[in-house]
Length: 307
Image (cartoon, rainbow, N blue to C red; front, side, top):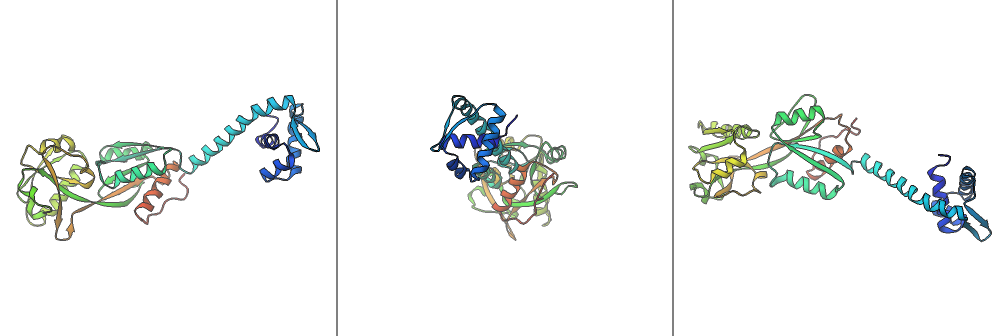
C-alpha cells in the first residue's frame, strides 16, 4: 500500500472532529505530525481528502467516499491487533486438558467452571483416558496439560502436586455401614471390593491395599473391565463396595450412597497432580497454570516464556 494505517487514523480523526488541531489532541500527537501524515496520504492517493480553511477542514467529494471505506479498514486493523494481544496473553485460543478422574464434583470441576467464567474466549476441550494415553498425548503435543489422580513423575514433563480430595466408600443403601456418617478403614475388613482395571482403578486398589494391608488384612478385590460408571450403576444391587474420590460424588446411582473414610491420621485423602511440557508454546496453558496456582495458593514456578 502507498500509505499506512496511522495515516488513515489521522484522516479519520480529522474528518470526525472537523479540525486538525482537535484531531491531534484526540490522538495525542503534534498537529504538525498529523498534518504532514495527511498530506503524504493525499499525495499517495493523487487527490485531496480535505478542503482546508481557517474554520477547520471539510471533506471533499472524493474524501467522503475515501473515509467511508477507510473507517472499517482501521476498525478491522484494531480488532486484529486486539486478537493477537489476547491470544498472546492466553485470553483467546484453545486449551486441551486431559484427566483420568471424574468431573461430576470436586476441585477439577470447580477449577474449569471458574476458568471458563474468567476466560470465556478460550475454548477448552477435554480428554478422559488412562494415564499412559494422557502422557503420550503430552509427548506429542495433542494435550496441553494432564490432571492425574495421585502422584506423578515423568522424564521430560513438569509434574506438580495441585490439590487433595477426600476418599469415600460407595456402598449399597442397604449395607450395614450405610447408616454411619463416617466409616473407618477397619470397618471395611471382610468387604468385597469392585474396581475397574482402567485408570484410576489400580490407583484406588493400591490405596486400599496400603490401608488394610498394613494391619495384616488382605481385602477381597475383583477387578472388572467395565467403566467406573458401570460398577457404580450395578453396585446398589450387590453386597460389594468400592472406593471413589470426591470428584465422583456429584453423580447419583440407584441405591448407592457415599460415606467418607477416616483413619488413624484423620480423613482419607488422595492428591492430584498436573503434568505439562515447559516447551509448550500455547499462551493459554501458561495462563491456565497461573490460574490454578493463584486459586490454590501453590508455589510451583511457571516458565516465564514457554517456547
